[in-house]
Image (cartoon, rainbow, N blue to C red):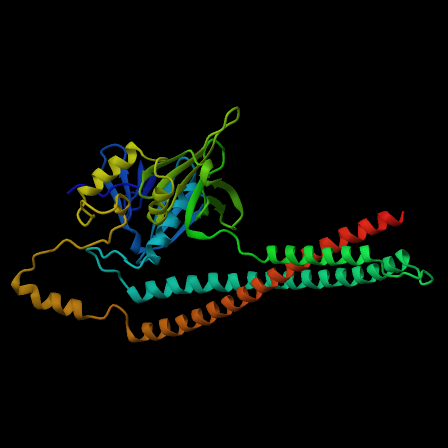
Length: 419
C-alpha cells in the first residue's frame, strides 16, 4: 500500500525520546497525518493522525532552542527542531490544517479510536468559546469607537449650523431689503441634493463576495514568511488579506495573468508588469477546493495545472479511500475518508459489536457539551446583534461624513466669496 500524498515537506530533526537523541529527516504533512521519516534509511519514526493532536506550540528551553512541539492525546509530546525554512512558517501551516481538520464535518475515522472523543470535543468547544469571547471584547471596543465618532460628527454638524447662520448674516445683513436672493436658494437646494446623493451612495453595499476561505499566504520574491490570512473571491476581483482582515493585494479580474495549481491545497496567483517586478502570491489552504471551482469558471484560460499537481493526483489515486475517476478534478484530496473493510473472525464478532455499542461520549460529557453549546449560542447571538448595530452605525457614519464634507466645502466657497 502506497503512502498518502504529501501536501508539504520540510527538512528538520526529531527527538527520539526512547533513545535520547535527535534524528535528522523530513517532516511531512498529508491531509490526515503528520509523518517524520529519517534521513539515513527512510525509516518512519512518527506517523500521527491530525485528529489525535491536542496542541501545537512553538517552544524553547535550555536544551532545545527554536523547537516546535506537538501534543498528542495521552499527554505525549513530540519535539521537532532545526526546521527549514522557518519554524514560524511551519507552525502556521500545521496549525491551519489541524484546525480545519477538526472543524470539518467529515472527521476522519482511523483504525485507532480516539482515547476520549468527549474530551476532544470539550477542548475544541472551549477554545472556540475563548476565541468568541475575545472577539466579543474587540467588537464592543469597536462599537464604542463608532459611538464616539458619531458624537464627534454630531458636534461638527452643530458647529456647522452655527457657521451657516453667521455666514447668512454676513451675506445678507439685516438692513438689506432682499435677504434671500433666488440664486442663493437654488445653490442651497443643489447642495442639499448633492449631500443626499452622496449619502445614498455611501450606504450602498460593496461588491458581492462569492466565497472566503482561511489560508496561509506569502508574497513570492519577498523575505516575508508564510502567514495566516484569507483568500476572498469576489465577482470582479480576487483579494488576499492578512489575519486582521487588512488587504494585502487586490487582483482585478482582468489583471490576473496566471493561476498555477500546485496541489488541491495550494495555488499561485500572478500579475505581470512591464518594467517592474511581477506581483505573485502563494496561497495554501485546507479548503482550497471551494475557491478552485470558482476560479476555474472565472479564469478558464489562465488556470494552469503544474507537474506537482499531476504527481499529487497520481499518488492520491493509489491511496485507499481516495476518490477515483470522474467528477471535478478539484475533488481530489477533498473526498471523505473511509475505512478499509477488515475481515472479522466469527469468534470475535460479539466483542466487536460490544465495542461499537459502547458510547464514545459519556452522559456527563454530553451534559457539559450541552451547556457549552448554549453559551456559544448566546455569545454568537450577542455578536450578531452587535454586528448589526455596528453595520447601521457605519451607514450613519458614512452619511454624516459625506454630509459634513459637503457642508464644509459649501461654507468654504461662501467664505471665499465674502473676501
